[in-house]
Length: 424
Image (cartoon, rainbow, N blue to C red):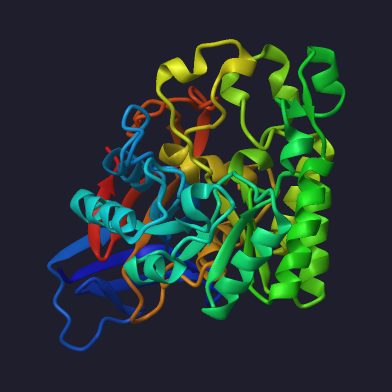
């Protein structure tokens, strides 16, 4: 369908564009920015006066729970929630049941994503069979089935030798690996950041070194193997500094942080609410400030949701017996806009960390507004507010932000030039 979008503030972080302009879409792609192409006839017109028009957001880590965990979510429900949050492309994690370690499971995920016809889904395949960290998965077959990168979920390889072999194999075929760094021995039994809050509450702590020790090992193995690596879910200021040092040495590494780590600290645990139970845990105020600085500088080039929906029962037990994770796709952009509201980031920088940055990290063909690019975009009204939880599409309602009044409303989300979400 030929469509024109008139009068919006168009921001494309990839090119530096930030001006009032019109967009013209046809056959699922952007055909012009500014003046209409010769002979262009619009079948639909959207008035974007007063709205911000930006690339659709790209989320590098969302658990869709399908296959295997239907009580928590499905590809249909979670990709619908993603549209409401302004996300047009997302990478799903491999910790499904069965594990996403075969072409068959990858094809199933992509088939269900096509049937849902919501956000684009880019699967991250398992780096090891059954995520056991012992035998390398069939990475080439997974790549050919549609996987864009390979990781081991939240499970660390116990054996450095096995991890080295996996990284060397990935490097041979120029594949990108996604590494979560947490030393299992140091983190074992922990529920909260090791510090004053954990001590006061009587919760077993997870030290900073649980991340930094594993991160140091992983960075050395990345350097040794020459593989392209993305480090996911950083939670400490020291971890962000280590990534900066690696980048300065020329290592091909990128990193992301969970949005909630930029907003919350371990102080939120004082009420023992299980909604704040996440792994890696919410860290200290100093860690949060360090992560924010790394996002602002670009050392951390992607902000991800790390969306983990749960059924209600999963959060009803005492804190230590509940399942970790936060559901946040429905409010992803409004929640991220609090960073602009609080003066921590300017709007173009935030949008870069939500679109072009993550797209570049995994070499995804999305996340920009340019002639010829896919017409995946969002239109947000900065003058309105979103009441978190008022409209909710995810099957998991485990969000500590429910009831919060957040800046901005995602008015439209378009995928391939088609309106997939429209706010009331």
